[in-house]
Amino acid sequence: MVAVLVLALHVLALLGLPLQWPERAGHAPQVVTQARLIAPPPAPPAAPPPAPVPPVPPAPAAAKPPPRPQPPRAQPQPPPRPAPARSPVAEAPAVVAAPDAALGAVSVPGADPGGSAAAAVAAAATDAGEALTANGPSRVHEPVRLSFEMLGQRGVQPWKGVFGQLDWQQDGQRYEAKLSVKVLFRTIRSQSSSGRIVDGALVPERFSETRRQEDVATFQHDQGQVLFGNGAPAAALRPGAQDRLSVVLQLAALMAADAARHPSGSRIALQTVGTRDAEVWTFEVKDDETVAVPAGQYAARRLVRTPRRADDYQLELWLAPDLGYLPVRMRQTQANGDVIDLQLREAARP
Image 1 (cartoon, helix red, strand yellow):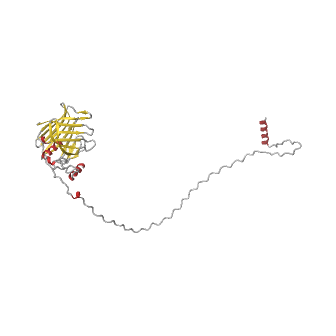
Image 2: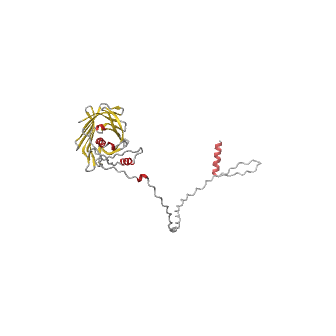
Image 3: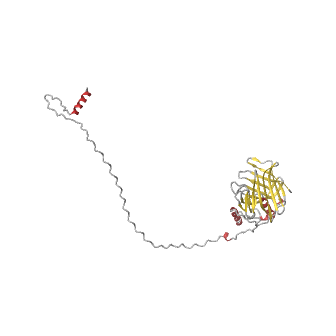
């Protein structure tokens, strides 16, 4: 009922009818307030936004006058330097070895523990890859056959039942050499070298190495280069170049001609050709040793070629004066620790 009464009062207010309560007796009339709901007038339409005003570019700055050129200032001259003192080493005359184009090696005696000036010159030339010139005679050995027993190991497995044989032939004009490694009657590896003999020195013309197949290096002395049969780039030949087999026999010839020229501490450098490269090998002459091999005991001069790179191998030779400085022992130590050690069993005429 209250809701109906409230609704009726709202209807009367909307229709504009006055609302009066009956006057009671004895009371003054009351003023009744009339309330109306008036809707606000509709809002005017929004005015469009004003068009943007383009910015006014700033006025260009007044150009500054170019700076006035300043006269060049005189630079103070530094005081003259005193002339450097000349060291005793610079005053020393250069050491020049006597040339011998047929040999292409050098022997530099080690006169003091720190190395002489000549040894430093030889070492620097070797590091630069230059061929060095011999200062001693050479004398090749008579034909001979050397038989070796092969010791050493491959990994953790020792070599067993492996033998080597070096056949050396020469008639004073030409030579042939062959080194074979055999198991029973089967050759598993061989090296061959052939060429001329000039003034007691070896001049290789062909070198080959056979494992599963034969790789060949051909010396072209008239064109000053060596060609490789496996497609490797040709290399320049230097005077007295040897191959990896003839170098052993050439070292023996140098020692046999005059061992006093190559004392302990000296170095002999020879360009040595393989089947794909032609590098300078440097052998250091060590003290004489007494070495025991299956053929007996020999006094021998030990020569060592140290590795040139991390993947290179060390080669040691023991050259015996009693055999004309032919090798009685040859040991090769690979970078991975594998060792091939050929020790003399017998020396005989072929």
